[in-house]
Image (cartoon, one colour):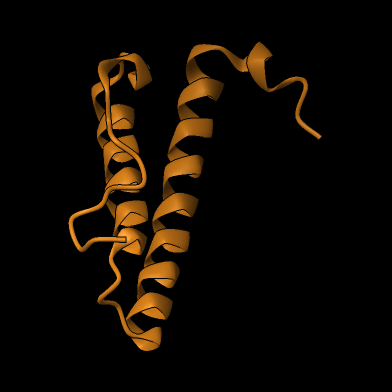
Amino acid sequence: MSVEANLIVWTDDLSVGHKKLDGQHKGLIRLINHFGRDTLTQAQMAKQLNGLIAYAARHFNDEENFIMRKAPSLLDSRP
């Protein structure tokens, strides 16, 4: 895989129509795309993965809070 390869490319059809959440989705894509680089050492990859996990946790918390405010019935099917 080349240094410039992206695993995921943002397109407008991925938008949820909410500026903050779309921005976070773009951030997740940027972090995921770091894994497409063949120049990362194992230590760098571990650091990137930990950053991705922390970012995803914050994002999913924000997303759930947004849904709880705007459409709580969507959360009724949670396990």
